[in-house]
Each structure stands twice: as C-alpha cells, then as structure tokens.
Length: 133
Length: 491
Image (cartoon, rainbow over all chains, first blue to last red; front, side):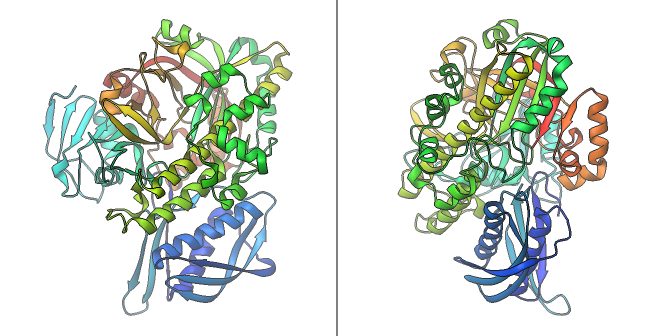
C-alpha cells in the first residue's frame, strides 16, 4: 500500500495463525528485496507473547527483524504451533544471508489494524501494518 | 508574524482523509485551530508556502500533526516544518513541546533512528584542486565506511567499551584518539548527553547495534562529497570556515540497529503503562508516559544513550574519512568539523519560564546567535543548521535565529522531505536511469543496488530550494551557503 516515506503492508488469512505466517512471509520478501527465498537447513522455534492481538502481530514481525539483523538469518517459511491473541509459537525455516538484510528498521503501531472479515470466500482476518524503513 | 494574512476555509486536497478548517497566518505559515478537532489541546501550525502546503496536505501529515496536538502537556502549538510528510506517530518534520512537570515523553515522537543527524566536514582544499583524485576519494570512502543495515564497523564496541560509548558518546572517542576537542565543541551538546543511562538500554539493543559503530546503514543515509557553490552570507560563512569553491563532506546517519531497538522496546513498554497513567491516544504509535514518571525517565536515559552512540558513530565515520582524505591528498590535508546536528531527538530545554521536553522528529534544532548552547565559535552568528537535499540536488548550510525560539521552539526543517512513496519513485525511473542521470551531471555514485538508488531519486523529494526559502523567509534560520554534490555514497 502507498505511504510517502515508509512501507505499508496489507495481509489477509483465514485465521490468526495464517495471518502470522502470511505477514512473516511478506516481511521476508521485503527484507530480501523480492528475491525468491528457498528455505534451507533445520527449523527453529520463534516465540512471542504480547498484550493483545495487534501488539502480537507487531512483536512477531519485530522478532523476525531482530533475528535477521543479529544473525543474518531471514525466516521465510512458517509452521504455526500455537496462536492465541497473546501468544505465538512458530517453527520457522529460513535462509542465511552473507550480510544482514536491508530496508526495514521496525514494525510500528501506527495505523495498525487487525479486523475480522465477515462471510463468504473472503472470511477471515485482515491486517495492516506500517514498517519504518 | 502572527498577523492573519488571509483565510482559506479548508485544507485543500487532503487526499481521502478528513478536511480541517485552516487559516493562513503569513505567506509562510498556516494554522489549523485547536477547535478543528475536539481532542486537540493546542493548534497545529505548518510552515509552508502555497505549493508546499498543497503537497503536505496530500497525505496523512495533517492527521498525524493533529494527533500530536492531543498529547498531554502540549504547549503553544504542534508544528510541521516545510519538508513535512507522513511518517508514523509524529509526522516527519514534526515539532512539539510538552511541559516537563506534567507533560509526556513519546518514543514515537523521536522515531526509531534516534539522533539520526548530519555532520558537515570542511576541507582545506578547493574542489578544483581535489578533482583529479576525486574518484579515488569516493571509492576509498565507500570501502572504508560500511553501508547496509546490519554491517559491522571497524570500531567494534562491546562490553565495557560499548558502556562508555553509550554513557559518554564523543567524549570517549576523544579519549581514544578518534576525535579532537574542536570536533566536540562543534557538535550539538558536545557530542555527549550526560543524562544518558546505559543501564536502560536492553541486551537486545546492544546485540543489534553493538558492532555498528562507524557504519552508515541503509535507507536515506549517505556520505556526500560536495563543493560550496554559493555563499549567501559572507560574514556567517567566514565564521563557519566556509568559502565558495571549497570541498566539503556531508555525513548523514544515526544510531543504527541499537537505536531502532531502543525505540521498539520503549514503544512497547509505554503502550503497556498508558492506561495506568490515564492517557488515551488517537494513535497507538504515540505511546507515551509522563516525563516525570519512572517509565518516562527510563526512556529518556535510554534515548540519550542511543543518541550518544549516534554522535560517536558520526565521529567514527569522520575518523575514517580523515584517514582516507590524508591518504588521498597528503598527510597535511585536513577535514574540520563545521557542525553536527541531531534531527530525531527529545530534549529537555528551558523556553521562557518553562522546562519543556521538545520533540523534534525529522526536524533540526536552530538556536540563534545569543543562545548559550550555540558553540562559542559561532556566538554572534548562530548555530549551524545543515539541510541535505536529495541525491543530485543541493544541500544548504544555514544558521539559527534568536526569533526561532518563539516561532518553532528553535527548530527548522531537516531536509527536502519525501514527496513520493518508494514504490511510486521506482515507477518513475529505474536505478540504472537514476545512476546515468547523476553521472551525466558529473556526480560519482556508489550504491549497494539499483533499487536503493531509484527509491532515493531526486524526483521522490520536494524541491529543497523551495523548502529552504520558506525556512529563511519565515525567520526559522538564515541561509549561509549552498552546496552541490560531486560524489555520493549511498547507504
């Protein structure tokens, strides 16, 4: 989505678990600047706890950023083990990069939305989050 | 200045968002009154001529500025500088001040890149003398100053060393022989906030940024080799050690991953305590706490520590630049620090009879000739203000004015300001086209990739000449010199 200075992401999924996986995949693509990521090596457990569903999404994305920047390991594939509005536990697979990836500083609370989509084929959760880049 | 100039009934063309009543106070200033929204505590004021006002009203800048005006303890007005554009929480180019005794401090009002700022180095060479070895200079600078998000630097700092950088900033680098006393004198706050509290910086922040001292980072960060193209104020230029034709180097970077993590940590921490303090906000990213509360004081200490890291980062880059410069132009060649200014900070300042926590997000402090915090060498002239343009366009050196204290809490713009999203910018021109255009102007370019170049292309920004003219005419700062790029190293 268009934002003058930052990057605004919109993702949708049938469930909170699906939303976390989809948002994680989108962030991976953003960090790798669109390079097609093929996960390699064993999976690792990523866990976050938060005060509510919106904060959980922000904390989850910031956890992926933190691991990418400190370890040069970008998570791109997600098997969600547990998803409640205050806790996520995810087995993630990813790719190692020679240099930590560029572009994203943080997921922010600004304009943050996680909303239910009612009925039909579009039923599920829709989220918007803005990254500081 | 505050005389009603003309009245326009609504903000023009504010996208699909809300439209607010506004009136023009001068050819350079528009006000949205505090009555425009029921939750506003003070008016919102935008420094802009008609063209910049039209551009600023296009995105969500005004919504964000009005949100800022609702924060507890706000005084006078929430200001947007002429380079303002939408950000998150505060708009970029936003300035607001809150009473220290009962107002708030907000990490979202500072941003993730704490003490992102600009430092100008002046060479003792003219650009014409430097030209034959310029390509080599730019190449060596790009090799010695790591760019990219997480790249570590030559001046690795961990353990006790990192503690001292966080606690002392440039004072520690002076002790290590990486800075001179004059460097510190010509850096905002002497390059060291004594209010820093390294204990308030998390282990995660240390992990993320501990090895990034002396590195540029990514996004809009850069090192630019320039020529002083024009001097507007000869007396001020002489005081700043600048002359037409001179070679200069401009450094734009901040506190790197360490600062990003400090902000992430404290937005989360303050989000959790706002209800206890009875604070209700229109935007969760404005998460804040009373400045006098334990949470507010702890963030202030951590933010000042991250700011010290940023000052030290620009100083370490200066040290690298000097080594490269001496190797390129001889051992006797010199690079003098003209000034170093922060543009993402919250500072405790005395304004009139009040202690205020002044938040400047994408805005530069601009103190005048008589202000006690203006360096001794520049008393009578004003604190230098450094305004980088976009790649390929001009940058400006200005000096602060005494009247700016009453106009904007002694603040001015920080750059040209984005006018276009990164996605839109890439649709206009590819990175390869941008590179060719810059090279056709004789500008040497070093960049990690075409995507980064396209995102930061000149057409993605407002007209820096227009932005600076508004600042000058409004009395926020005075023009001293215009600098043009010769070589760009992009983060």
